Image (tube, rainbow, N blue to C red; front, side, top):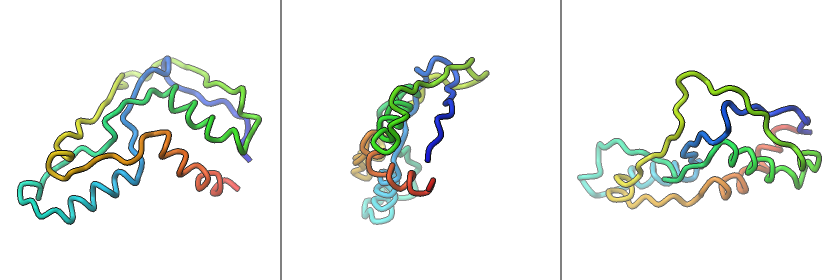
Length: 126
């Protein structure tokens, strides 16, 4: 069972990242491994979603994904602490090269990825 322990977020929670679900990474690797376009070979690619998710949004995505199995989480909220020194405020990957050379199109945004994976994660806790 998930305990009702506090979750801490450094800063105001509006720091954002371009979180990437594993199926997107697998897709990109398969595209790179099977491409017949010589211009696409031996390249370095950014693989992500091309969309920002704040830490607050991530927290609520996770909480909302878990409420069905752990109703005690319904009224929980993160506790915000001081920003960490040197933390990057926003990060967003430029995936245009992977799109152009490999035909990469992310199949899962953060909500879809969590929805697909959450049962597995919960199962590892039991």
